[in-house]
Structure formats: C-alpha cells, structure tokens
Image (cartoon, rainbow, N blue to C red; front, top):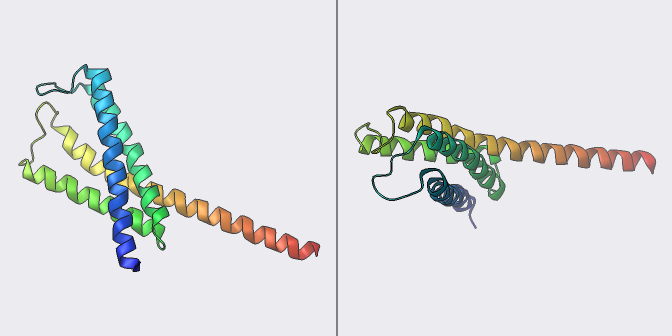
Length: 149
C-alpha cells in the first residue's frame, strides 16, 4: 500500500475509532445520567463534564491509533488527526451559526472544539515515547551482550 494511502487511512480509521467510542459512551452516559436520550433531553453540567472527560480520553486513544497504524511519523499522524477533528468541530460550529446545540450552554462548543482535538497529539507522544524506550532498551541489551561476549 502506498504510504500516502496508509497515512490517510490511519487518520480516518483513528477518527472512526474515536467517533464510535464517543457515540457509545454518550449513549451510555445519557442513559445513566439523564435517564433518556430522546429529543428535548437537556444535558446537565455534570453530564457535560463527563462528556468532555471521555472525549479527551478517546481523542488520546485516537491519536495513539493513528500513530501506531501509520508506518512513519507517528506524531505527525496524531497531529493530522487533531487537525481533522479541529476542522470538523469548527465546521460544525460555523454551520450552526456559532450557536450551541439545543440545550448546550454557550461555552460548550468552543471548549470541546479547542480542548479535545489537541489531546490527540498526546496519543502520538505516547507512541513515540514507547518506541524510544523500546529502542533504548534494545540498544542497551545489544551493548551489554557485546560486552559480555
């Protein structure tokens, strides 16, 4: 598979992972915290805080997936996921005329758009740190094998 195609698929695949996880968590949280997921159900402040929390965590997971699946530049792929999520958030905000969805406070769209996407980069950082520590460990093991031979 050409590197460009693999890069695009790693970012899109990671986005799908995030979207599915957020969708499932939102349905579960709404059922538990709001008692309903139907129209007219207004989110409470605790629900929105929980929602922001799992959105951040799942964005980190998405960045980790994008960085792991890509065959080069793990941090770049996590950053690409971050940029894609930011673009979607801003587009949604513009389509809604800068207004929050019904029942959401005015601060919510801005906070979720500015807070969640950058955290995807943390997933990429986790992958690069893991890779570096494995490389260092392997190098030390090779050096100690050479010294003991």
